[in-house]
Image 1 (cartoon, protein in one colour):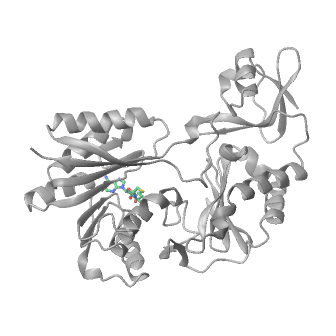
Image 2 (cartoon, helix red, strand yellow; image 1 turned 180 degrees about the horizontal axis):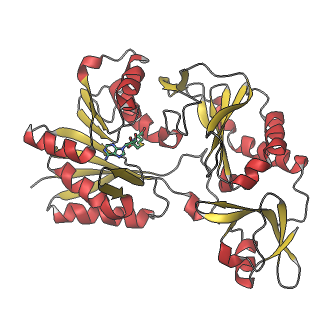
Length: 389
Ligand code: SAH
């Protein structure tokens, strides 16, 4: 099947940019098959597929004229594995990303390793339709994987999570990261209990960044940052998340590491309500973690990183100790690192505090980013130390 693309798109794709938009196509969209993208002169531009997902309508997989067959996927997985050789050597950690979509030249799917199990996330119908060949190739290159779960991250009538192949994982499954245990659930909706892309940030806390400090973890989910911080000697942690599940799940994580619960507080509460509560109670913190979802709706209020992050920073200042640290984090792909930094610093300037950027994190190496596709480089984590004059 051939589809013509615009001259502009052809140029972009030949330079390595993999994602297609509707405006790039001169023929109608055809899903569920491999496609040769050609230019006006019928010359091959790239091979790939069309599949509508949240950020585009298809992906180019290679600019070479070769079949997208079993051997193609085996080679692709083999290269992905080779890039992560050092993660296999590392005994303190057994959960990391095995395939990072477009970063590994297979846009539309990611695969994570959780101990002996893999979790495959499909972002569009077409690649999901082609899963048999892809998963068979995956198993050939990763024979140590005992069971594979899949997540369907596109609109569908089917359930969004299931065991796809092999043995089922215990519930919870305990994974290890820098020798800290985390309880994960591989078959509970789309999320597993830990976001592997924050590994290096957790490591910083585990190594004592918040030692002897009082830490506030906003949008805490299962409390992963707090577990790491408590393991690294934090005095107390306070965890705030709106979801009811967060209470039990956060306790479970602390207990999995024999951490005393009496020094940990877990509030099932809206972040903005907690800011008011803490101010009223005159609570203050040495370190405040702000890691919200890119978009969230609570009752009538809608929170968007692109618009509302400054408000989080402003509210944090009121309950931060002098010389305290704000960890500002976002995974919003529509907010560049520059824009994110500007938003934070503008909010700090408006509060009339002096600040110093003391640490900065982007994606870890297993979340491979292709320089031709910078939108894949979505994670931004900035640590600001604040002086209140
Ligand atoms: N920081 C976490 C991940 C956060 S995921 C970690 O590193 O593990 C986003 C979380 O924000 C979800 O658990 C969701 O329940 C929570 N959330 C969304 N809106 C919220 C709000 N208004 N107040 C508090 N928590 C909220």
